[in-house]
Image 1: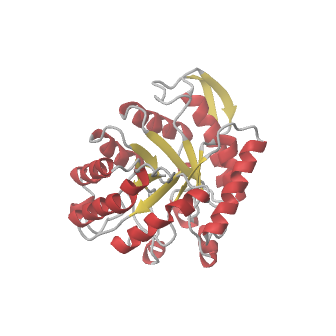
Image 2 (image 1 turned 60 degrees about the vertical axis):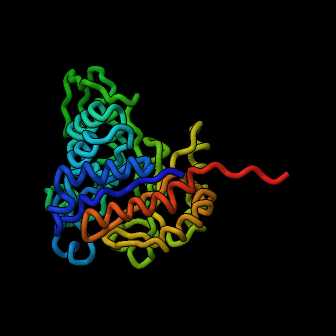
Image 3 (image 1 turned 90 degrees about the horizontal axis):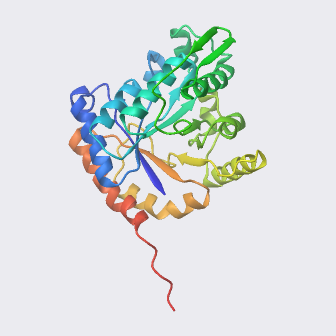
Length: 315
């Protein structure tokens, strides 16, 4: 099992604690030292007040935030969790992702999704109903740009007449692409375009807001993961997609304790049996020191035990 720590770049109410260059770097360094495999950040460029009042959150620009984390770490992967692809011009996104991959030495994981906040699409002057089609188109265009070869195409609204994007990403042919969402369409997008799937816990009552199917139990998760791997095998994929999941009961803007961590440590085998390769954990605390204490506690109770070799069976 591998682990992602969500950086606290949503903490707009405590900027002096969490939204400085030193704060982002210090938390990322602590995650790396504690044995986390990646740090992740969210994406909400211009959220609506109504959504914020109901538990939504702010966010630093994900690629800029990860660049500060990259500059002060050496090995830890850099995950956008997630980047809403149809919010952005695909060629500008390709350039930003390639730049971060080059400057970080090949550590980017592009976690992406189609997005669900109609109000944020409207604020950005973007159509909501065609967001899935624009996501698929963006992926095709980004891969063309990442090739480093001259590109010519006419696919409205894009007119590309012999353009080239270099340097190419360090990771070839491009950084791993993981997709968020619980739907079959999200899973098909993983099979067609990506290397990983990022489902998330979803009560049935929240489906109307997030517009993705419910996912309420480990049994639900195991069923979906098995379906994804069947789809990948049927499509001729040799390697099964990676699966990254936020543990049940662990939410942003909540401060878990040692009991919750110990319980999760006991469930790692269950998550692995359900097909999970990565667990993404969001922590919250009133202060940076408090957050760093949580990172250290999680490492002792969950990460370190997960990395110990199993004892040999008795003769």
